[in-house]
Image (cartoon, rainbow, N blue to C red; front, side, top):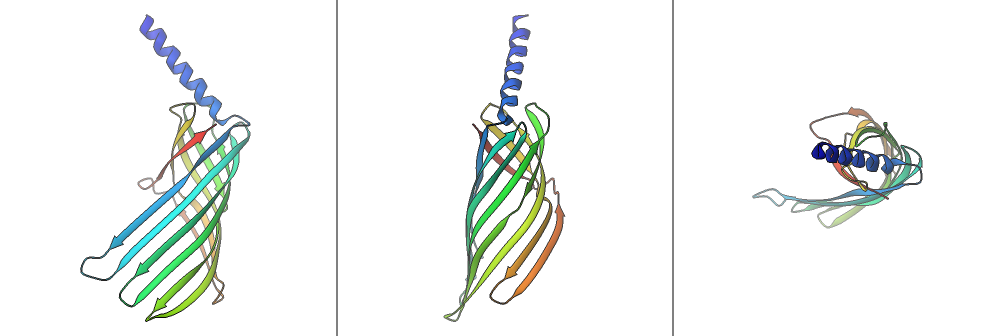
Length: 194
C-alpha cells in the first residue's frame, strides 16, 4: 500500500511541476547551435558552416508565450579556383501556444524568420559581393515533454511556411511556399523554463 501511495504522490508532484512551467510570468530559454564540415574524397571540394540562434520567450498568459531568436549564420564552400562565403544576421520573433496542462503537451508556433547578409564569391582571385534579405512566415506544430519543472524536451517539424528571398545587388527575388511535416526528420530541442 505504501508503494502505491508513494507512486501516486510522485506522479501528482511531477504533474503539478509540469503545469507550473507555462504559467503567466514564466520565461523559457533555448536555442540552436550548429556546425558542419565536409570534404569530398579525391577532390578539392570543402564545405564548412556554423550557426548560432539563442531564443527567449515570455509567457504573457497561461500556455501562451511570445519571444524572439537572434542569431548568426556563416558558411563557406571551396574548390580549387572558386570559393563562396555567406554571412547572415537572423531575427525570428514568435508566438507559441501550448495545449492543456500535463507533462506531455502539443504546441503550435507561429514565427516570422528574417535574415540579412552578404554572399562573397571568389573565382580565379576575382571577388564579387552581393547582399540579400529573407523574410518568411512559419506555422510549426510540435510536442513537448516536461520531465522536470525546469526542462522541456521538444520534437518539432517545420510545418507550413512562406519565404521571400531577395538578392539586393542583382535585384532578383524568389518566393517559396511549402508544407514540411516529415515526421521522420523532426528537430529535437530543449527549452529551459524559469
